[in-house]
Image (cartoon, rainbow, N blue to C red):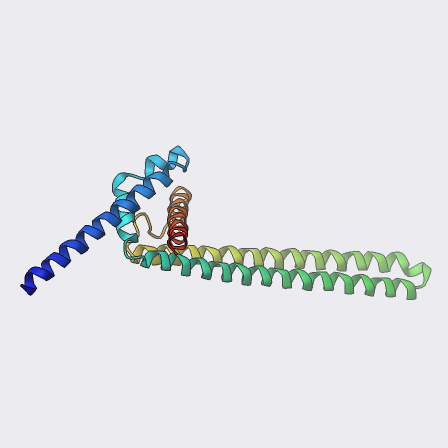
Length: 198
């Protein structure tokens, strides 16, 4: 009797899972229609079905939310680093202008052209250094963001999310971004449905 009861529960669980899979797949198919047609064509029924299966237990939603939070923290940190560098450059420029003004005020008129030429060279050298530091900072930011993207791709691939693997191909990245957007929209719908049930 217990064996029969267990088998019935398993069948009911299987039916619930199948129904949930169908609901997710149907919702995904509806959301895909909002994407540009070039991406609609690349998202086959099999891909969407595999994505729906990966979303069944809710773990992928939690992973995506965690990755999003990490991304926001990383972006904020990189933004603050760039702001600090810009601030340092602003202070450097102000100090240089102040130094130049004081030197010109203390300079004898016949020496002024020589002083101004030297100050111009100093200013150009400082501006060149500032441009190089800004370029280096921007390159660091791009590399860090590229690393984050690769980490996200790897995490989602390991979680079994269809369409995710480490790539730098712009078309594949755009497709993955669209898949993430589909996941986020489903997650929001789930939250709204949960709130409506309360």
